Length: 457
Image (cartoon, rainbow, N blue to C red; front, top):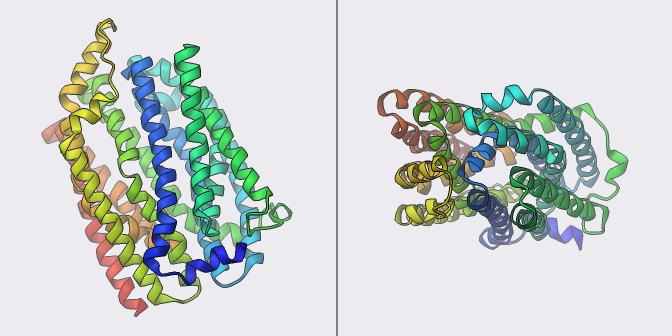
């Protein structure tokens, strides 16, 4: 039964297969994104917009450590998908054992470092002024749960590489439901404030870890006996690291972007402008869930068929994934173009008895947030090509082009733009940097992907 699940990747029609893989991935990302969105709404309404800004400051550090799990997972899953395509299950087991050892070692070490230098890291990422204290509270608690998050993210990608998207979907739903439930208990009922928000997220990470462990200790996995392979084999570690560095570089640059953006925005407009970006950041995580779902569904299909040398199916999967992702990206863009005020107001409290400083921030966000939201999402209809293109090179084990294409948008283009444009246009320059970086990265990715398709024949 387990073998049939992975063999489907090489036999089913691509359109049907992509839907089967992408819908559970999209639902999982939707629930996870809804968790982030609703969590932010709860925090904004029950604690205040300053709390959202504080969480936004902490995210780059905690997400970077958590992203190590994703990086190790994606790097290893690319190898596992191709190994399963070649019928080499022994290698798949060895890779997973190395993934576990790497995830535990690296994330625990970084958590220790992160806690030791928290008073330096928090201000560096924009946690200045009134944002510092709530950010420190949230940061300290959340880091304790980040290694469990990393193990969950790593395991989730492997579950998907086995051709079991429904299990991967559940693994993303479990922590989201747990987090929202704990939000209500810890923040609303117990009135724990920022501590409640942090503990709610940490409990969510732990619940996800329990589910993923249940999957790999049960009968559903094809990677049987993985516990005997936990350890380090240099050849495998090297291959995981080369491919995983693409995902890690993406998150590292994302963290650097948060650092730059929070500081640039703080200098331009103080805490209020940081709060505007914090809300936009939540919408970026939420609104693009169907595009990310298609991308996640595409990865094991491309990797398996490339490993099986079914290049016509690889090309078909690329074209189909771009078509589906472009369609949903356009729908997302239209929704945000028409309803930006509604989206922004979701995060703001209507209470009139709030402190004047909070009321001032609310008024500023209402005035400037909708227009900023439109600009940031202006290039959404075309980003599918960039995401699918860079994902393809990662799926087939081509680490260098995947690495460069991944960095093109968030690093090579976005960082210079976000540093230069605000000099001339202020906050508007920050928002313009997003669609311009998307456009330039899409052009570069399109050229690289066209050449690769010609090579496949």
